[in-house]
Length: 146
Image 1: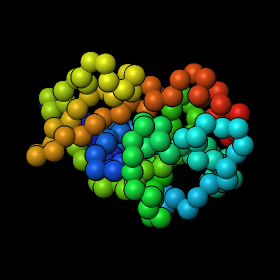
Image 2: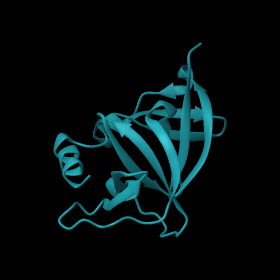
Image 3: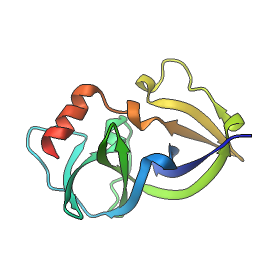
């Protein structure tokens, strides 16, 4: 049976997951330099070991309400050859889940970026496909700022 390793994180009261193969690192988020004329969900840019990386407020990107907490984390992911920071409320754990425990995403949800619903014990996890999270235009905008 095939299994997948996932990084779990929370946005508000919901749990989300991204394949660990797309997560380069997890850092404590201490704020970003805001860039004028960028989308509202773009927090700004950070300097991570000499690289300028755009940071996205994932809750805003997904139209979710979350509490304004000072102790946020950023998942540094790689998608379409770019590193991007995703600001999340909390990174909770890394788990392995069997492919058979992943259901297809409900139709009409998430513009294709929700790739499935994972069932782990008594909870449901929303599995994101980070390669489909941003449109081509949005990726161009991030390339412009970072």
